[in-house]
Image (cartoon, rainbow, N blue to C red; front, side, top):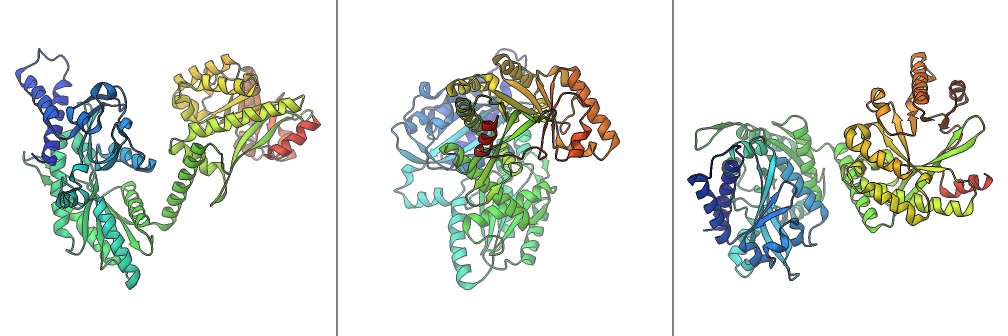
Length: 592
């Protein structure tokens, strides 16, 4: 039995078992279910491929004997842990992010992975990961089946098969594309010609896997591979990248018109209904992205990235279409990736390279006293220059780095407050902004308390600002955490009020000390009577709820005059102070 056959059979058995086991109120185990379990156990025990079965959260529930033989870990050593126990350091984090993105979109992933045995030896493995769901489509398990490729190193033919061929479709794989692309780029540079690269997906693949099962999904992939193979020129390189994604490298006739004609032809062929062996009919929605050398990129990785970006644009535009690279959008995407990678480096090295904190005072208008300071993050990027928080904060949030970035800021603020309190008699409370993701961290309150204690300050020195939108994403969890933080002594401020859900009805439910009115209200109120009335209403509501009030965006005397009869409040804006570096704040504190 070859590797691909064993993998197919194991996945079919697992799918059958998962389906059988999901039914409610089943009678005592039937003969058929007992046989399926025996078959699954037989496949697990006698397969030469390692098998890992995890739950929906990636926790290992079961491994087979081949896994132990290949890795050196016993079942008892890995059950309850994650597959990262065998992860090597050969792959960058982007490799695993791409893997998980593919799993989320299609339910499956195939490719070569460098893993690590218990002895520390790194080995090459062909890995096939598939997602199992229940009748409602909810993910229940993931199954990873791997073939150890190191044993094939001495056999040139087998090495070539597993290095350059996709076992499911018998097409080339990503490694073959990389090799051919290097050759094509070298030839194109010598001869001054264009080459084209297409990234193609068949569409609806995840739904097909969930509705029909993995075996039918594999059959559709093989059929579409044959369709593509018959449509492209003999000189073209056709490979399967991963999941339901293919790539076509065109070595000649790569001008826009010819590439568009080929893409249009492929869309027509791939969108035709497919009749399966059980006579069921499946309709697909393919998408194609096209990149051209040298216009869109000049190297291997850049050209593939450009084609993948164009492919994403085609999917977002509604599928059943092809898309050339939008250079402006592609440059923006490349910039975001650079920011993401730089953030990852800065946070992981904990050196804060280029990051700094500015502080903007919040002032009581009646006497000009500074009541608080807001810590604002700034970044002087080594390649891109000064970056606005409006640009890099969303990148941090989208790449799951905002929690660590928040905590870096908080640590810096705590240390700075401690230094100020050693030197100056009166140091106002300092506020820091929290991302929405921070409320998913169960340990945040205790971490924060430990942070201020390490710095030698008290929770009363720190005010936490959270936006309306973040609070409404998971109101129950957010309220519980804010109550815990207030109980520890931290002040809580609702930031940018009026820009999110405008939750006037829910305001009394939140454990707050302060309400910050967004600068957009101040701008509108100075120009519009109805906006002024709304601002006045919000001020009165805050006062009735015994909340301190901060009005942002006060930049002119006329705006300050509008607030003259609003009662006690604090203002923040360029009229009094711009955000300032630490050295400038120190001068103000020294005067105080």
